[in-house]
Amino acid sequence: MNTVELASRIKSARLAKGYTLDRVSEISGLAKGLLSKVENFRVTPSLPSLVKICEALGMNMSELFAGLDEKPRISIVRSDERKQVERDGSDISYFSLAHRRPDRNMDPFVLTIPANGGRPEPMPHEGEEFLVVLEGRVFFEYNGEVHTMEKGDSAYFDAEVGHRVFNEEDRDASVLCVFLGRPL
Image (cartoon, rainbow, N blue to C red; front, side):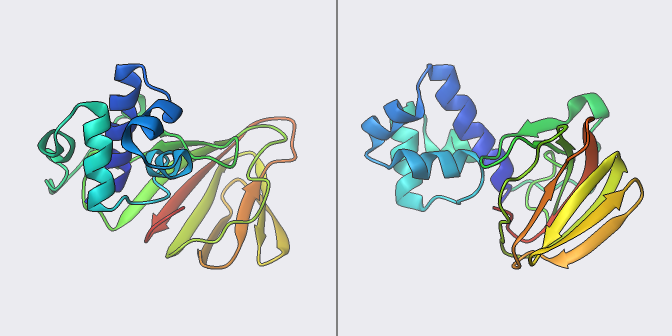
């Protein structure tokens, strides 16, 4: 299942209703923190939680899941069709490059790391990850060791070890990031 698209649909439905996370929490009985993690695709909700979310948003499950299991042989996403995915915990902008292909094994993103920004703390998650710097210079911390990475440099690593990318330069940097497994 395309969990990024599922999260996006839930958030879009909430915003279309004009509801805050607090309001959905109040109606559904689910914790605001859990709802935030669902919308930021850090947690895949259980079936009972999905039922509560759908009821709170006035939608049925079939609407929420329609087309999520379709798997086209090819998925082309034009540069102006990239979908920004919100993640909490940093000021990095994530742009999904494969949001049209559900049930994929990899999740490729272009990350924009703002000048003097990035993830403040290392964060491990399941799976493996690949990074390549497209523009600028970034610093990549892995297991407490900091590596300077410049345009064209890449890293492939076990994502279950604490890691983060940050930018101490005065201009934004761009990184291609591919998750294999479940990113947080």
